[in-house]
Image (cartoon, rainbow, N blue to C red; front, side):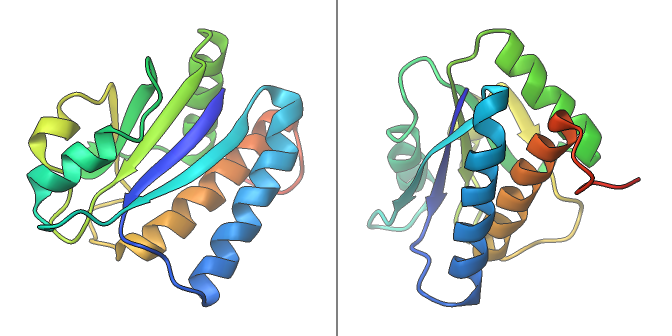
Length: 155
């Protein structure tokens, strides 16, 4: 299953970009033997920067037939092992592509959020979207290590 992350905004060089690259590289390396791979980071900066316009730009980044997951504060909170199991279920259901959407400052427009098969929350706190990317990448890597039985994740 190929994973695309579609996010509003461009990540500039700096510590967040370095962490993101590191975790996505780790995820790709550890996930490939498990049938999970990182496809691409799709960054959009539509004008005007309104949720409906952002939603259209984000939706265009999903491959045809992709299962879509929204990062949203109203989504379901999962533990790392639960997230890993969900990724494995989707992979085992022969899901070819997973696209994960990260909205801009005003979040995801309901038109896009409602089309997503699943919604995931990192908790009730609001996180900067640049940091949310890093957190997502780390959880993807953690999921791959959990599925591989690696000691990276300890309970």
